Structure formats: C-alpha cells, structure tokens
Image (cartoon, rainbow, N blue to C red; front, side, top):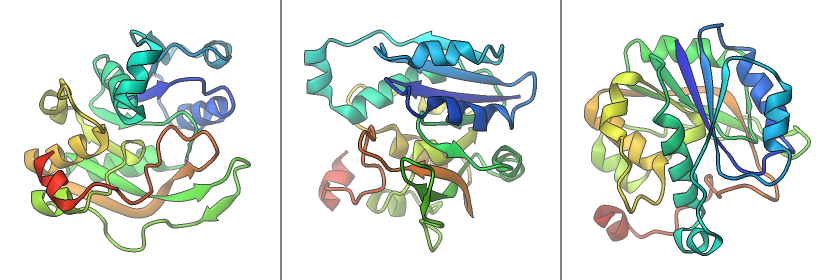
Length: 230
C-alpha cells in the first residue's frame, strides 16, 4: 500500500492534471491524502468532482494572514505536509506538490528502489505553465549522498521528488517547531536512519510558473555556517 501526501492551497489551475497523473499509478487500496490550507478558489470542488474513494481530504488549521506573513512560505508548506503525513498509513509514503505532474512508471520504479533503501529521490524534468518541457533532465550528476555532512553543505532534497518507507516516519514526526523547510529535514534524517538512493531517470515533471509556492530549485541564500547551525 502507498500513501501520497499532497499539501494544497489555491491550486485550481493545475491540480486536476496532477491528481490524475498520480491516481493512474495507484492501486485500489492506495490513498491520496490531501491537506488543504484554507483554499479560497475551486481547489476543493475540483478534487470532489473526481469522485475517487482513494482521495482523502483533511483541512489544515488555518493560520491568520498576519501569522502566515511572519512564518514565511517554506514554514507554511512544511506545516501542511506535516498535517498530511499524520494521516499516512501506507508502507511507502510519497510526497507530492499540487502543480506538478508524475511521469508514468514512477511509483513502480520507486517501490523497486525502496526495497533496499529507506528513502529515494528522483531526477526531474522542468515544464512551463503549458506542460512544455524546458529542461529534460535537471540534474546531470548524482546529487545526494549517504554522508550527513555532505548533505548539510549541499542539499538537493525536494519533497515533491521523494518517497520513503514508513519506518522513517517516526523519526521525522513531529517536525521541529522552527523548521523552515521539510525537504532537507526528511532527506538528512533518511541518511541517518538508513540508506538513501538517487534515481537518475527523470520521473517527475516540475512546473515552474508565476505562482510557485517556493523557489525550490534555486540556489540557497544561506551561508555554510548558517546551514551547520540550523
């Protein structure tokens, strides 16, 4: 059984395509857990219109606008992921964003890799708002290591490209109170608990558009010393 955890917020423009790309690779016993952060557009009605029993929607306790501005987008997304993960029951747990697309064969490939690894991260292609591929293979070399310190200095973990075995879940939950990004938190804990693997084949279509929740693929502005401190 797999659990796919997806945080949502005002994702009406792309969410139907993304959910369909995920459901097409799921079995009847699998689940898509959606944690919605008080969407004000048609996100929830679009999800409901799919009428699929594998989709389970939970509502994240909304933050006030003032608090959201204080926390920043990374923390907000992390809290929404945290809410979804609390409901996951699968043996394999996948993380997904609301505006990307999954390549066919992705779930099968991940499950094969996770037989011998606690966590896996795949390469991805970059697409624009019209699904046109602008970069076929973003990573040209292996970008994750089983070394804790290497991953602290140069971390390329991305939640939307990761999946892990359920044995990792007790280690990553609850998220630290001041967690800024769950990507690095989950990835680095994976290296501490077991083996992690990088899948060089692009199995994910990462969408870059004008309303991305976070600039995940951009270079981190944080210094080496800040990374070590954090």
